[in-house]
Image (tube, rainbow over all chains, first blue to last red):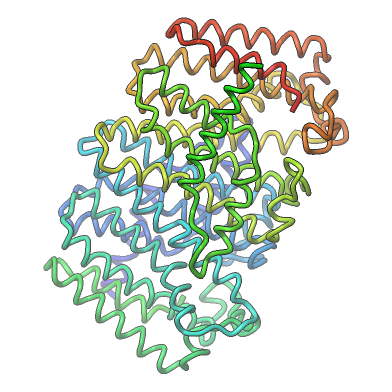
Length: 295
Length: 295
């Protein structure tokens, strides 16, 4: 219970930061800002920005320096959801209980709003990094985000995911999808925070292991929730994986084994983080939350 | 004639650079690399990377340092074309005489390939900037590109352009579209090259004026070519502006006035660049080429 209120507090802080960096809705091109902000404002757990801020903190950095990155990361996450929901991709009408971007603004604007959010994320990180001490750290941090979001990260996983509908795939390929579609971005978020703090190699290594393991666990739990979850709690229809004949952890190794796998990953994540800090309370709580969450 | 062979030589150089930075087509996510490279390989004038390299050179920089930026800029230009061509936007089947990306790879992959190119452009600039002297210059240079490509640049112009089909718009709004849809990115390209060279404010100012004026002239000529151009030379159908009832320079002020306006902009561009360098031959030639081109 205490952890959940701490998480909520951090999510509120992440949203305050986000609001500060969201584009103003003005000018001839006002509609695109409205479309961007519509999706940025649609809630969510704000996990990724929280991870960035937390990584910066445990690596001994000044969390203020990571704030624009937290906002940017949520912009990138949001762009990926807008494009995922498009008719040519998942064709979803609802996201977190609200109409998806293209349902409100039309397909053309949703495509451009996604593009705009990705670009504006980089603009936000770059603009705020100019003039700071240690510019090299910021170059590295922005690069971590770009890697996590790109073809060797999130987009790579997304592509293979799209190509794996209606076919059965082996575990190795499913793990590739999970590792890249979800975990890579979490890794990027945390490594960015650590880079801003100027963390050494060993710290970055342990933070990476934590992020990768909770990221994989997160995705396994997503697979599980698509079977056992409550539609009204999740805010979108369940059962879509089965409907799309998608290979998932439960479909390949069963529900029980999937739960066990997720738990193992969570334990690994915890031991990695315990190696570099005594301030483990929040990140341990987050790891536990990831397997116990219901949405 | 001599200028054209010089331009051709520089385009070949830009393509060699591009090839060096294009993603390898391998791994589970191979298809996305194929889709990215399909459009990167589809020719074009390679004007934007040439502008970056040229700006770096006249500002006294080492052109080698700007090479990854040249490649990245062509990736951004290419992503914008892929998304522009999508059914929800311009719905074009042909681009430079070849099938558009979504016609070959399908809509889902074309959306993702565009996203991937935008992200990979930043990845390319960031990765190659880490470890160099003067990291601050590179942060500034990447930021110039992000600004030129974003909601206060290319995407902004694109949005207003999409919203201005089938309606008549005033000259002020048309100029906003041209300035942002086309000129902003050219400005970003040249400013990035100048930043890498560590140019002072005055040089950057003059380079900006040159880029902005040739960018505006370029777009006016595009409007003109859509009326008087030869389809087989341009590689796409002409007359689409009239068909879509789009306001253009010729539709608002007539062909003759449009030509005059373009010529004025070209003269302004030349005088800006002459203020900061004696090495004006290529950039003068380029300015002249822009109003005399037939595709």
